[in-house]
Length: 465
Image (cartoon, rainbow, N blue to C red; front, top):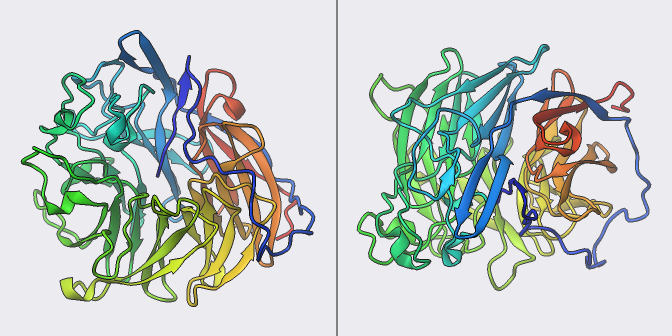
């Protein structure tokens, strides 16, 4: 995900805020009134503040709470958050203070919502928050360089393990030349971390070989495959650790079959999104994927390219039968007017698209047909989710207040807009628990209270489904 952090002293940067002007052609249901289901803030779970500061000359910027994707496993009764602000104290050559190893923040979905961090070993830290001002490679003077940061995407495998994408944790940025020379020593060791939910211990550290962050992922329980995306790869002149794989964004498919202690899960196949072999040129990145049991395929949100920044694709990947040659891209469904970042699976093979540009929409995964465009939504979305407990789609998306995210709530059957609840600046992540029919949003300030990092829990007793 193209994440943003709550930044103190300087304004929040939101590169993916949607334009307020949307084309009217093909919009469905524009006359529908909001169908509010009385979902409100139920409680907040404080997670503790830990400030991390980046310093570039006289410019100083601090993040109060840096995080990325969240996930709920209702079978295991846990909420998981890719959290860069907490964890063990770690050293870095970056110009910063307060650096930590990062962790996977685990919160029990049942009260009293006990918070337990899943920590990497002290001698094997995750990337955490990194500072980098090299604008040519996505950096800025903000508190955190997204392409080098981790953990990022997180999900569960068989309700027993947490799998998370991490940045190049061995990268030591020394000095700032703001040229490609800054990355000649990037070890290109972005990875996937595996944790046992039973013991809380890291059980595997799988080197993906990315020079920049390994980000979001999805799980295919039929073929026991995990898919992860490296959305920010690009050529690094002079870097001898880089290979052809690193010249464009790519995906990795990894076997989730159990391995013996000390062994690594097998990387079955990696596919470059470079416009060849059935792919699109994903120079706008790769965003949220999902597995659809009805079709037996992965679907991946691909934002529009540099020439078409307001459009995009849903890329379809056939997982095959663990055979390298069986795994391939079989379709790229265009999404004109929607630059998709979020993607969630609802009932009857419905895909909910959280668009960066353009309103949210619902697609039939089997046909690629757009079933509905939710014209009341503003776009500017990052993560989206489906809450099977109340049959609603929810999205962490833009509000009418610049820089502030909200929780968009949309009925799935029939598809109908409900409401948008403002949450906080930078609150770009969301997950849902079907057992309690609640929606979970990590945030700093806003609904959490001034100067407070928390996970906010929303729900309602008077819903219509």
